[in-house]
Image 1 (tube, rainbow, N blue to C red):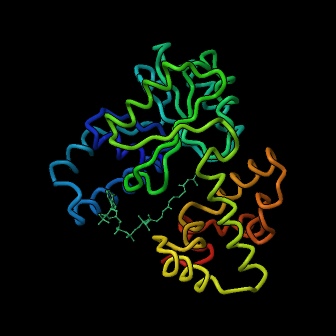
Image 2 (image 1 turned 60 degrees about the vertical axis):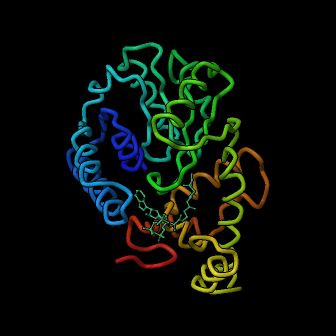
Length: 272
Ligand code: CAA
């Protein structure tokens, strides 16, 4: 999702520094953005000038210090609380402007924990994008109990006015608003497959053709990533203790097997 968020920001005319872990992941990220921009160009969503301008405004680095002069940082590392906490500790030391907003695209880590990893919890906020970020118009804005109202106002106007997305405000509870509704549905589809009730193809066709969803639930799990779905389900289950949030064994086994969906070439469906 980091690539998608960087793409949106660059298309909005912003100078974007993408901080990654290695030159290889910079290459992968850049290639992903080029593919997405080319797709949007083919679909007539942007011009060649827009695409070239966006690519010129993007720079990639593996050096966190390159973020020192940033006014807004949007963290989008893997969905692992310990890693995210470490990143926020480091960002707190690196980003000079004490009014800079440190935002996170997490789906599973409480915003409060990331705020408390810094000396500036008032300026830490959730900006939860939806996959694919360049296409879906929503961003959930998630303040923690310590986030200043001014931070919420500033990030909401950045997201609406600069990025052209729509915002909803969600409390800092596991799953926030959309995933608290979406995850039980996706887990039900996995349980339905696991119990032999219906095939993956039929479950997906059922929801696509019968309910006009753009894609079926199992294909959606593959697109989001089984590891991400599992992390969000675990966080919902840990917080609310309700059985419908509990990750089904099939999901756990597939995550253990490295069958993470589209990004690994196989999940509930296969991808070339
Ligand atoms: N930039 C701008 N627009 C783009 C684009 C890009 N890079 N790529 C595609 N588009 C546009 C296309 O032009 C098209 O627009 P029109 O309908 O106006 O023509 C539209 O997006 C659909 O694109 P495609 O025709 O290329 O592809 P598709 O019809 O097969 O749709 C999809 C693909 C967008 C993924 C669609 O299936 C979809 O929306 N699926 C559901 C996704 C979803 O539910 N996401 C939420 C996941 S939950 C989450 O992310 C949160 C979490 O924490 C887990």
